[in-house]
Image (cartoon, rainbow, N blue to C red; front, side):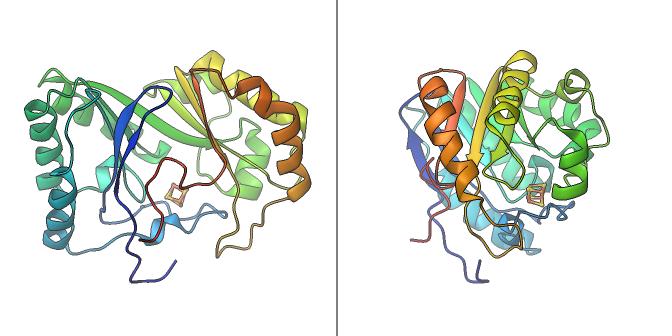
Length: 241
Ligand code: SF4
């Protein structure tokens, strides 16, 4: 990812849980150690510049589905306060009833205050956590995800949706199926991301990807509670313009 990364930041998801989606910019992921990730490079320490950028894209929101997802390079708490206020005001103005955003495990104790900030305005909040796999040893030793809890039900406390990452060395059809089923049993929704080539040393395993596409994609592709991103830009944001 280059330093002058200029992605598409607004899109509309028309299938499965239809919603508008915005890719905003914050001060940067505070974890930054996930071995597979270079997404955290989309950040700036200039709060005023972030707010100006975020405001220009929040202005695109129409409220068409009364649901909005905001993502950024890390967690909701990495967004500046003016942006958070503008998200809330945009939800009020555009009659958005449900707001989705992401948060890393390390910020879970900060979440109740953020949720109350929005729910106080009558907006239902759904928080997504990237877990990638419920195999805790694999997750922490290979992916360095930074979740010091092994029990899925305890990880799920305070979160509503989970991201999983497939297409990695060592994953099997059984392990991926187990991850999806564990996700569905403990969270309202599951978002499967397939590993794509990026600037990190973690490379997609083509055989594992093929196994997923052949054996599991047909099983879950029509499940309303499962989003599957074959490319990480499939929600329409994140692609260079
Ligand atoms: S928490 Fe998210 S943004 Fe931060 S390094 Fe991990 S995957 Fe990347």
